[in-house]
Length: 75
Image 1 (cartoon, helix red, strand yellow):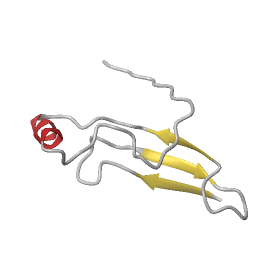
Image 2 (cartoon, helix red, strand yellow; image 1 turned 60 degrees about the vertical axis):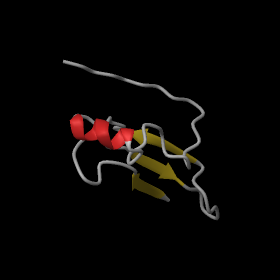
Image 3 (spheres, helix red, strand yellow; image 1 turned 90 degrees about the vertical axis):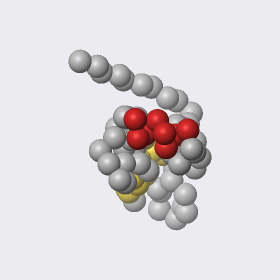
Image 4 (cartoon, helix red, strand yellow; image 1 turned 135 degrees about the vertical axis):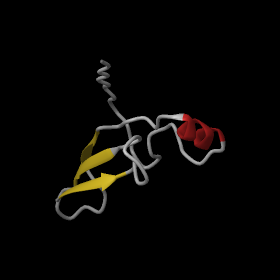
């Protein structure tokens, strides 16, 4: 089974993080998955929310990361 989970950007456009998971038949937990479009929270409001601990700057705890590759494009 293939599923998509949304971990970020529930109240705005920045800070998005989506997870594509593949679960084999008969298993309860995903056997493979990738993170897609993991963005950062931006702006003065995000800085103050981060300082107050209202948003996290890390990957969600339930994600096991064996290999992490980052593509950063700035223009």
